[in-house]
Length: 324
Image 1 (cartoon, rainbow, N blue to C red):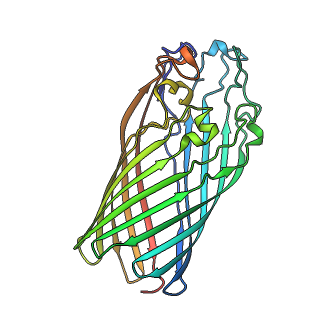
Image 2 (cartoon, rainbow, N blue to C red; image 1 turned 135 degrees about the vertical axis):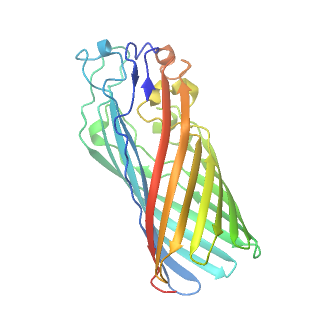
Image 3 (tube, rainbow, N blue to C red; image 1 turned 180 degrees about the vertical axis):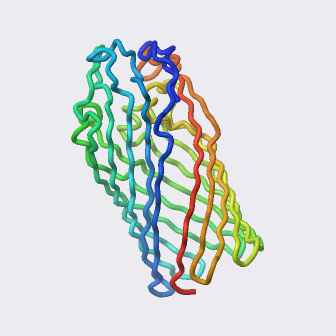
């Protein structure tokens, strides 16, 4: 939700709740072992930002025409496809390389930036536009002994083409940031523990760092899985990362709301047959609030705006093993 009633740029609009409450998604992956040293595969992943308010986030009197419904919707989705090759020189180490191919869609009715109102709507005007991108990732995994493993990976930015229909409000491409991840796993009898540290370099993407004021984000991830029976595995996880949005650019990000800090997950996998495995899971992000302090890109015009977010998610999955 957004409450812009105390922000000069948003007053007198009061509290508004996002009307796009559900965001379905999916993923697909497969791998094939060529021989004891080489394997190939692919994986898909994605995410979306779906925000729509009933009224504009800006002062209705500052719009052209006055009281028009613009600057109230931003819908952006990204899908990544990663063909991968891995090499295992010894049973205790493996290395992988992936090409990351990206596809994005976007529609919005943002107000065109201007030094002063009245603000008019982008020429894109809620027409769906698309962009394609490419990047790469490398990684490695090392089993120190039967109890301890270490892993690391690094990815380049996924550099996208620009959204042609929205160049008047988004002159730069919406690239995905480079990342670095380092982790360890502890294997004890029927239970595995993992601890990972991920650094996301949002400030290296100009559309995020320069235009939206995002900072780099450090994410700490902890997970555990326990084999209750030969067929049933239960899992739980937690990760924490401070919002990439600073408190001085809250109003500027009111149509994206990337402010979640704590994520809790739980799930289970069950082996139905020698070939089929089913999985279920749930995710919960507690309510978090941020208030604009008026010292950011919008200055005092954004002071007092407050955004609030909470997420609940469910997962249903299936895995098929072609051979034992």
